[in-house]
Length: 136
View 1 (tube, helix red, strand yellow):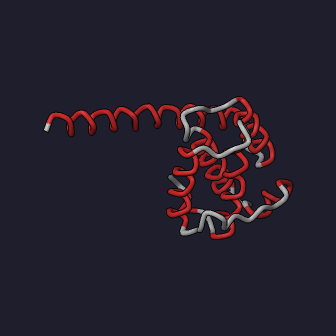
View 2 (cartoon, rainbow, N blue to C red):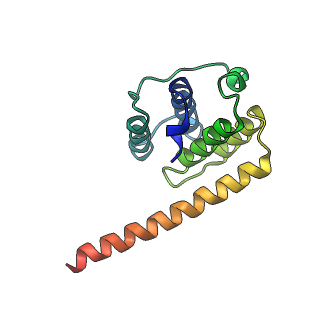
């Protein structure tokens, strides 16, 4: 959604965190999550293994602007929803990230709700598109 606003190094850090949140629930990246993540890699002009892993205590140094930190958190939430199961461990991960990024939990909850609503609307569009294809 908003990854294009991040710098190259921020995108690489996001990719490392993205893989962390995807394995937070079951220690593996399923096919739906991987497909979504590969799409994000393409959007960011990164290879699937181009991540940059840093100590989370250093995130603020690489994401000094609040807007970039909000993009990072929002995109992690969206990624966690990619298999349509926002697991409790992923919720804890984003809570910890919000605290690390100095973003209020209430703002994170708004992001979570908006991502959930976005998915519902997207699924409705898919249903309409598929219904129209069947009727042709």
